[in-house]
Image 1 (cartoon, rainbow over the protein chains, first blue to last red):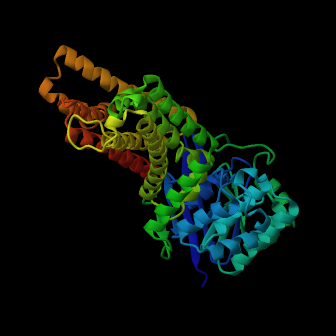
Image 2 (cartoon, rainbow over the protein chains, first blue to last red):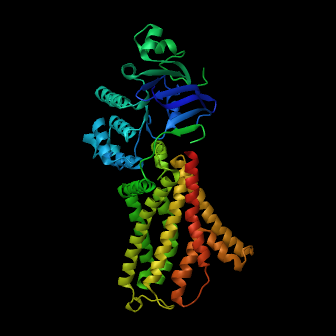
Image 3 (tube, rainbow over the protein chains, first blue to last red):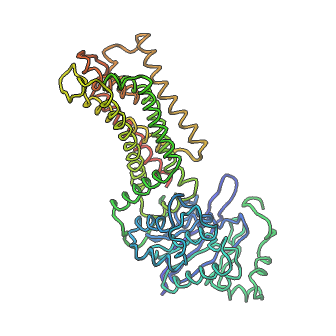
Length: 237
Length: 284
């Protein structure tokens, strides 16, 4: 039986009048990759923050492992520190050895940048550093908020290959993304959110079968009530 | 984390000391590598040396130098200490890096205490080096007759200057602690500046209230010791006058109760620090 590593049960959260999450339930099993899709403002980031324990939902329950990897949407690190120093700091908090830090640097392809200060890194390299810190210590569950943002296609593919290896090693991964091609290729399960509500979920193959298509984009157009190209705020509709 | 967030699973791999040291080291490196901190430190040295030279206290001995330096130091040490500390946690929060700390096994206490120790070391080193330079200048330029280590009243002595230095470092630590409180309370740089102004107004307001209380008789002479020990600046000033200045004159001036003032200063270090930990904990 597959072990469930992370669960969020009936999560609801409001920011004032805006419903950011509306009865969202999600679980991540060991060795699986779950993708959260949805237009901007659909509640993806709020869901990830709630699952990471960074936001206490108004109602609902989160069960998370003792150790967790988390990549925020736009990771910015304390300036004045090199890539290696930044990772060493986080490693030290986790009790992770420098050998493992070097391993993560190698796996994420940051070897050439280890001595560079974080403020001199490009957006893509900063994203890579963010992914690297999330992988430190091989936590049982990893939450990534748009890990492919700012990365070139090669690097994007490389990052998902790294995540795929982690999945094979038994880690449970949940990520929010707009990269439908990579989601199709990598996700074991997909959850589609709109204005904080889960409007569809399932394995890619079951969704393709249900909507009689082989394109996630077509499914999104079918499922989402609003215009997928515009920002929708919970409570507006 | 609230009751609705339940952690499950394995043990943590780092010790409390490891985590505390990691934060201290990070804060120290930040201070060393931030150019504005270097500029502030040089400005601090320049102001203190400038005050000394303008007052010519260095040509008359340690005690006169202390009297010359006391007021400028009272002004610049708090500002310097707050400038060095108010962004320690606020910077992490505004960058979003606080989230990366919150998901890790770093407690609010370890985070705030580590930031305090790191920034406190930096402030202490700058104050110590500055006072060392001042002390050397006094030793070089003052008359030979008073260049002795004396323990009895009536003689000027570097020991008095040593006490002044220790008390000034304590004053610095008070405002590092206050700066960290601002750092966890504020949610933006603008908010931090508003909080800083508010706290400075409270401190200055307290001083004015003491003067007013004395003038109107609300504060009686026998309670003055206690009242003076309550404010950080009045406690510092009282301690300097009591332990680093009055002895050399051979006159016992009852400026403050040393124990109450020491207690006051330590309360001003520990109080804001505990409050900062509690607020950081609540926000976690």
